[in-house]
Amino acid sequence: MTTFASQHATAGFIALDEQWSTHNYHPLPVVIAEAEGASVTDVDGKSYLDFLSGYSAMNFGHRHPALIAAATEQLGRVTLTSRAFHHDQLGLFCQELAELTGTEMVLPMNSGAEAVESAVKVARKWAYQVKGVPDGQAEIVVAGSNFHGRTTTIVSFSTDETARADFGPFTPGFVTVAYGDAAALRDAINERTAAVLLEPIQGEAGVIVPPAGYLAEARRLCDEHNVLLIADEIQSGLARTGELLALDHEGVRADLYTLGKALGGGILPVSAVVGSRAVLGVLKPGEHGSTFGGNPLACAVGRAVIRLLATGEFQQRSTELGAHLHSRLGALVGHGLSAVRGRGLWAGIDIAPGGPSGREASQALMAEGVLCKETHDHTLRIAPPLVITREELDRGIDAITRAVTR
View 1 (spheres, rainbow, N blue to C red):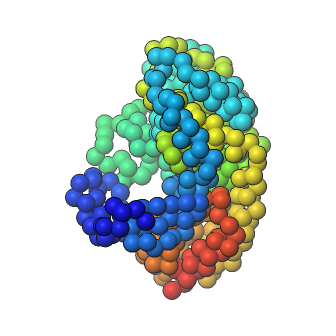
View 2: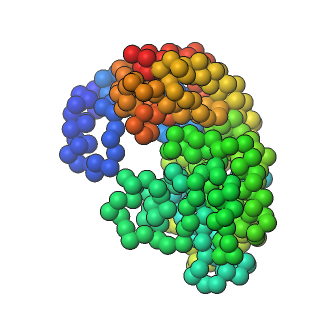
View 3: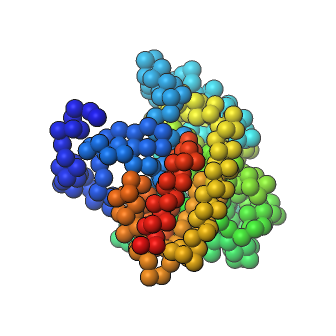
C-alpha cells in the first residue's frame, strides 16, 4: 500500500471527490488504490475481485505485464508528435490492427465516443460522395436502447431520457427502430440512408443479444440498398464474447467497426474506426483529425494489445470460462434471477421481482469483496477480466448467488 493512500481513510477520499468532482457518476463507496490481474485493493488494504473490468476496458486485467512493458518502453522514447509529423509506431499499429480485424484501413482516435462520431462523419461523407445522397439529407438508422457514447450528437439518437434530458437541441439525421426487429429495420431504410449503426450485443441496455439471424439480415438489407453497416464493438469486441469481434459469432462482416476500451489495455484511451478502404478513403487531409489520436504511446500499447489478441488465448479463455459463468448463472433463474443473457465472459442478469435492486445487490457484493455495478434498476452487468481464474470466477458467482437470494 502506498504511503499516500495509507494516510487517508476511504471516507476522506470520497469527501474530496464529492466536493471537487462533478457528480456525473454514482460510484460505489470504495476507493481503489492498487490493482493487478483480476483484483483491486482499496486504500484500507481490502482486496476485491473486479467483476466490471472498467466496462470491458480491462479485458486483459489490471497492469498486464506485456502492456505495462510496452508503455514503459515507449514512455522512454516519445509520447506525442501530433499528426503533423509521422512517427515510427503509427503505420505499424494501423497495419497490425487491420490485419487482425481483416480490414483494410484504420482511423485512430481516442475515446469510444470519438470513434463513433468519426464513423458517423465518414458514413455521411461516403453517402454524399459515393452513394449520391443529396447534400444535407443523409440518414443513419440506429437501434432503440443503444449506447454509443455521450456527446451531443450521440445522445441525439439515444432513447435513454437520463442521457438526453436538458441537452437539446439535438442533431438531426437519425432514425430509431427497435433493436432486434428486422422488419422495422427494413422499413426504415430508404434512398437517403447512409448507414445502419448497431451494437452486435447491447451492453448498457443489459447485455442484450439480438435474435438469431437479425445481424445477418441487417447485413443483407444493407447490401440490397447500398447502405453501410457499422458495428459498434467498443464494449463487445476484442475477445470479450469469445470471438475477436462479437459480430464474428454470426459470420457477418461490417463495413466499419468502432473499437475502443480494451484497445488501450486499461492504460490510456485508445480507439479506432476500422473498415474498408473504399469507405474510410473518403477522408482527405484537413477534413477530420485529433491531436492525440494515434499518438506514439497509444500506438505502442495498442500494438501490445494486438499481439495478445493474435494468440487467440483470450478468446479461448472467454469461451471456456464464459460457458462456466453462464451455466452457473443460468441455474439461478427462478432462484433469485429472472433472466440471464450474454456471451463469453459477459452477462446481464435480471434480479427477480421481490429481490434487491441492482444498487442494493452491488453494495452487497462489495461487502463480500466483489465489485460489480448495476445497469438499470434490477440488472447487473457481469464482465470480469479475461485473465480471471476459474477459482476466482466461482468465488464471484458464489457471492452473486448470495446477493440476489438474500
